[in-house]
Image (cartoon, rainbow, N blue to C red; front, side, top):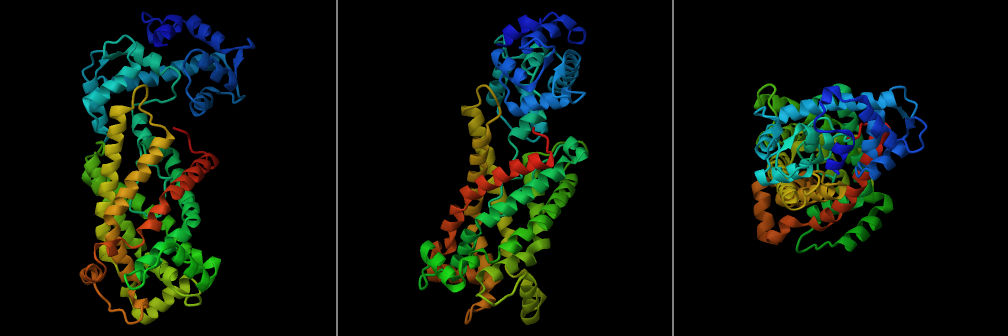
Length: 477
């Protein structure tokens, strides 16, 4: 297809700066199916399909958004030619940024080097797979003509688009907030896209958490009350909660869980940016290790700020009907009977849980990404929605599995003041007590409903996130 396209409209001998207008005109006529002198979105999609360049609706809409200067929903020849010339200039800059030795060709080693500066580590074999999808003449290098032909109608403007394919999505919320924050480009920060994405992610998280709240409350109940002497299974736990407080009680504590999304996201994002500045030199791209350290420290900072809400969420979830009238009443009673220190019960195991969660989540994600690039990246480095969702869900689940014993001890420390006759133990004491009375399985009480909520939480949060991005006008990448 690339050789044909070059022969049809982009001869290799032609200089990109002095492209004869008749060649643009020939391509324009091929796209203008009804010959009315303008190309609409339908003609662009059909024409590109016929030329063997299917891009997908988002990409074609982005071409229209950029090229349709007079906003009439159609591209005339002048707009079409201006878009292609402007786009070629951007692609020339991207080409030069990859061509490290300035020999006019991009090699696999240069792709590896460039991606490393952007915080993405790949092997030379993986870089060769990327090259193969662009290389038209089989030389295993890409010259300017091949690069320009490949990206002629692709609305990406720089190599960072590859990174964006593999970003952890802000919109995926499985109920735990220990993941490393998202990366935003300078353009996204300047244009305000970053706060729209965070807002979309926050709304998606609220809907997802509310949808899976019954499973979350059941997990907490099993963590606090589950033991060898008091076995609580999934069906028995639901039956007991409904019998004690009705169907509405299944969502007890969810309000606090939703309210804390906004301050936690804001503090984490701010702290992440500050820690990145401390760990990297000005202008330097953040690497995987620095991203892990910055993300973990940002998570710890955010958790410190909102931790009293975590305690109140647990107390409300474990509390009986009528024990608390709401968040304010819960806070007032804790302060009156237990003092300020009660709002930070379980803080240490919670803080310790951030490192295995964030570390394993990031490591598994990188491993899955590397496996996909090695085995499945033939024509594109874009893995698609389902692969990204699967990788994100699996890596987060592994992170949860590693940190779950600490999460269980944290929850019991938060709630043990509510249990009559229960000794007030510290973290080490609780670990010893659980292992001596319940064995190692006791450290994983409630993990079944926790895993049960992962898939619906991922699915719901993704759908809501994508819809909210459209509503808020977030540019599709």
